[in-house]
Image 1 (cartoon, rainbow, N blue to C red):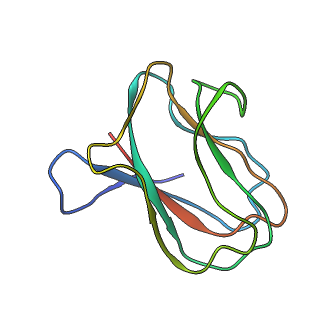
Image 2: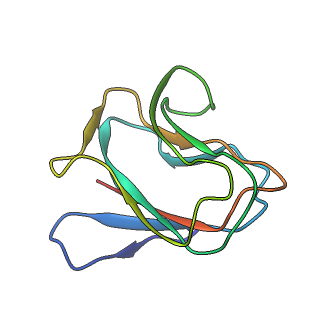
Length: 101
């Protein structure tokens, strides 16, 4: 997993490869989830959780099956996560980039 900065001050982006079996921990401490950029088509339905290390707990974001390539952004101000940000995976999950702080 690599993290790169994006143009909006204070927002980070983390890419997740297609088919990542996950879960992928984006941030293991409290933070803010801003959205997802789908970068390849996949039949899977990944979900984003307010959790420090597991794909369980409060769902704060999700993709529909076979989501089209493009942005799936959350609320403009982001979603506050009190525990962390973790994304579920799966063999059919699309490649995506998660935006967070």
